[in-house]
Amino acid sequence: MRGHKVEQLGIATVGFFWCFLMWFSTAAFSPSIAAAYHLTISDLGLLASSAIWMAPVGRIVAGWAADRFGAPRTFAAILAGCGVASIASAFTTSYELLFAERVVVAMAGVSFVVGVQHVAQWFDAHEIGTAEGLYAGTGNAGAGVGALLLPRIFSTDYRDAFLWLGMLALVVAAWYMWRGSAAKTMERRDAAQSRGDLRGMAFVWTRYIAIALMLAYAMSFGLEIALNAWLPGYFAQEFHDKILALGFTGVAGIQIAAGTFAAVASLNASLFRPFAGFMSDLFQRKGWTPLPFIAKELPYAPRLHWLGIALILIMLSMTGLTIAGLYGFLPLSIAVLVALGIFVSFGTGGTFALVPLLFPDRPGIAAGFIGGISTVGGIVYPLIFASVGAHLGYLYVALYMFAPFILFYFWAARHERHPQEHGLLGRALAGQRS
Image 1: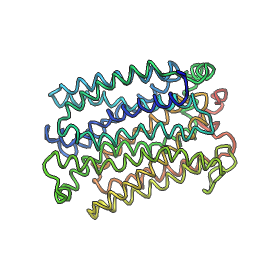
Image 2: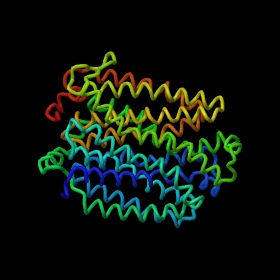
Image 3: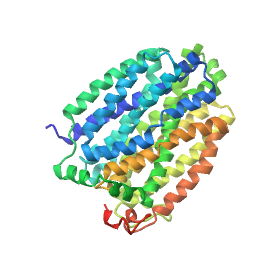
Image 4: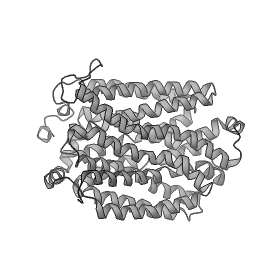
């Protein structure tokens, strides 16, 4: 049947995988682009952050459009537009124009919230964690696959890579339009459309718990996309001599090694995301609520506790990454990235196991806000890493950003009754409760 939920999950997952592959294909070839245009480490930091520039606003708009027009139309439009820009960038010789075109291609990242809305419209509360984890985890693997395979397939020829990625994006866009179905029932689709207005958007944006989940996603997915863009250049620059000592030579060799090391975090963040969603479901079934301060009586309280544990582990791992870098110990740095990637998956999977439950009538708007504003981290973190110091930047972000984020999450998740009702402009928006 055209509307079968497993088929819709597969369509959304393939679409997101290809978008993620395009999104970070620039990072996979950053050593080649740096060599071709003589870029410095600061230039690489700017190039890395540029992949996220369009995501905050773009995801907000995409989430609203998914509610308003349906996921298939919205997702297909994103794939087609980014595919055309990727094809154009394959024929560009000016770095300024290439930079601008790759910023447009990076809009592929806004597709995430469209897929979240699509999956939420087909799966029920008891299975939403696993379903969203499968969608996002498999899709996110596109970044790791790109870092690992694109340099091996295309060597230093990033132009051919951009061309093929763009052409195949057009094929996936056509398939999404042909086989995609917006919602399990017309009632679900109509409910999302009727609440896709500015008042509903204002309600979601001003809820303390929505802000807390946005910060949690900035700690997890915001960090993940920052590392996807940052790590190839980081390893190529900061561990250059150690990579040479391993037997890799020339720009192509260093690019392959740096991409392989960078892929460790991304692949784990992707591969373990279904497990993270499953663990959120398991916490829910078992009723586990081990953390103090966080609500324990809410119907979904165990999911809040699982996410809180994930955020603490992410902050500790960032400290470990600084220690490994300062001592110049490449194996330890990779080992910490393995753990960090897993913990990031716990955070991303835990966040979006909660979003559809807290805002069931506005899944697109909520996903757009939480999944959109949080991507600012992908812009800010690489700039901090490059300015504070490639190694110390991880510790700086952990202490001065992540620790306050965790405290705010604990504060917002303390309410035992309807945390989504608490926020700014509470009385004015009281009628907008999900």
